[in-house]
Image 1 (spheres, one colour):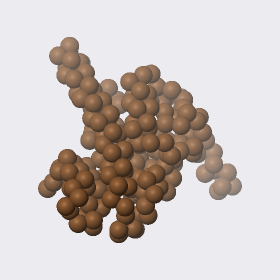
Image 2 (cartoon, rainbow, N blue to C red; image 1 turned 120 degrees about the horizontal axis):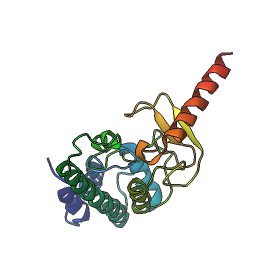
Image 3 (cartoon, one colour; image 1 turned 90 degrees about the vertical axis):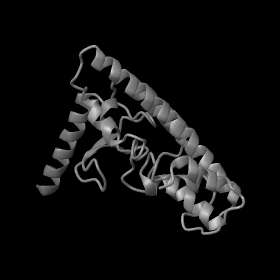
Length: 204
């Protein structure tokens, strides 16, 4: 199975058939897709001016989309490396039990779904590398009450999501399922409480 870098080389190779170059870019999203595969693809298509079903896109647009994806991936992989080093130091110092946020990290290792969007057409409009930079900054800091990507406090609890995690806090501003480690317990509890009230009101 080809890795991300091998697929990226195919996207850039002018000797490759255009259909293969497009296919290779799609396959890159199986290795790194911050919003999930479909939402990340929709984002790249929208930002670089080719249709999701376009079978003959401009090769320059494919390469520009790959460039954006690679910049975001580099930021995320650097964060993962630093995170792994920190865990090693913590274990060496006797902290064997991982913090609660580590479960979230295990589920998104490699960057797939790190800022998952439940709807493929609702995702941040900013470049992927900027989104990854904001997210990494938030993960390295103290939990807060706002979306790390768009800064809004309009976070709602969705009990039924299409992909894992099957329930969680969703930003109504940019559409991401907000990573639990970046939110305070009070913020999550408030979103859950509001969701329960909404359910009870609809039943009454």
